Length: 247
Ligand code: PEP
Image (cartoon, rainbow, N blue to C red; front, side):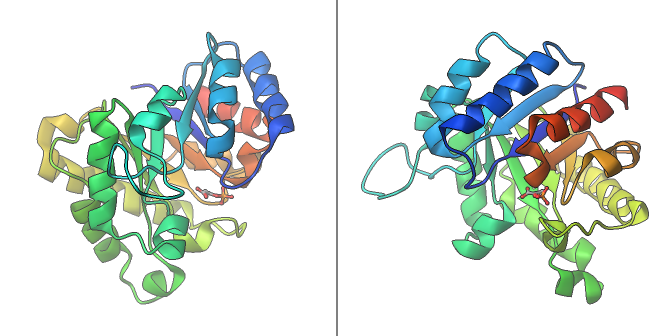
């Protein structure tokens, strides 16, 4: 299984940001893991063109369930694909919180992604209050159940465990807490999807940095990271790619 270092640029980056991706490409002409950047939609075509022929893959940060239509401000999976994307992040906690996205909607978007040949990076994770209430595994179980359609395989989906309270805060769970959730996800997914979930990659996301990447990548049932802030600088994301390559 090829591990995955995925960068989520969120609503950051204009034209000059392409130079950061070019520096990353130059530093990692090939890598034993997959490297993905999901830029703002405005940069997707340019980044995909810059990445052509390199080890860098590109993706969207969201897609609509429909192929086209009267949905002002939205973008379809087909449009992402045409702009060069091979992945799309779905159900990120910022979209669940800012746009009221439910797990049922995330499942419908995941189907749209699959129908257009995109690999869905489906995000799940508990809030701080849910963890404090001892509800973490219940929340993960219900988000996995409701966000993932039948038909999932390791070839069409990646799961990212992202505790909401760890995103952009500099706080991460203990390694034991991450391991507990990844072990739980691995067992839950294999119980539901059987052999199809065999090649499924389970990422951790939330304040991953060069300084904590190696210890996170040593956790069992963990196959890479979804990285926000630290993916914006080639030097930092490159160090995370190097740590994943060495793991
Ligand atoms: C994210 O938004 O997916 C994320 C993990 O952000 P950060 O790395 O900045 O915590």
